[in-house]
Image 1 (cartoon, rainbow, N blue to C red):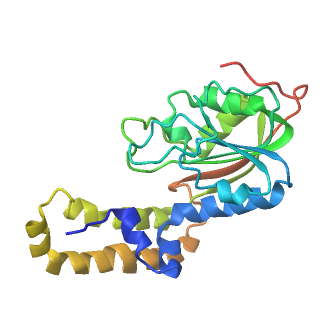
Image 2 (cartoon, rainbow, N blue to C red):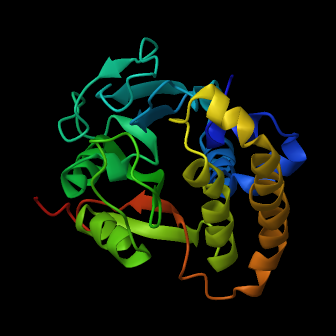
Image 3 (spheres, rainbow, N blue to C red):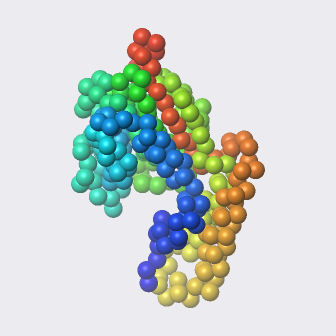
Length: 254
């Protein structure tokens, strides 16, 4: 019997529903669209931790370079990488890029300060760095999962690397956080380790749990999130930073 994890379950739903359930991607997509619009044709763009290159399509008008160490996920196809490299030792000269993106990567590097400094090094002064990372998320891509970030920790790392925070936005608030955790309930109550017969026998219970906790409650919580004005209890952060001129703030050695 074919069973799906959370990503597979979301893929089976209509977009107007799944877009409200996969809440962290709302901010990632918003940031990608901003980067796409703000990056001029022909600009040199670094995708740091590009994985399978899923963001390349946003930068077809640019000179895009996807870089990854290619160790995070055994199921991923890294064959489309432009460069395989450690993000803390990028094989590019200073100021080689006009923009950089780095989405949901910094939790997977064991020296995030060194990585941010290195990305800052290869950006030219005045260029923008679009990035995001989780604050409250389950362990994933194990054992390559090391850190979670508050907005203050995020900003501190960027500032030490000679980057100015232009914008810092949460991945929703408390209600989006609850939505994500409710969606995980199905996998916790009915783990995929169950054999097919045991899983089939549980279907009369599984389907109501799926409907209530994976769809109905998360949809309600999506709209309730506007009531949370503080949004300190968030799933993560999306950020835009700008590289300062070297004479204004040189990168701090790590």
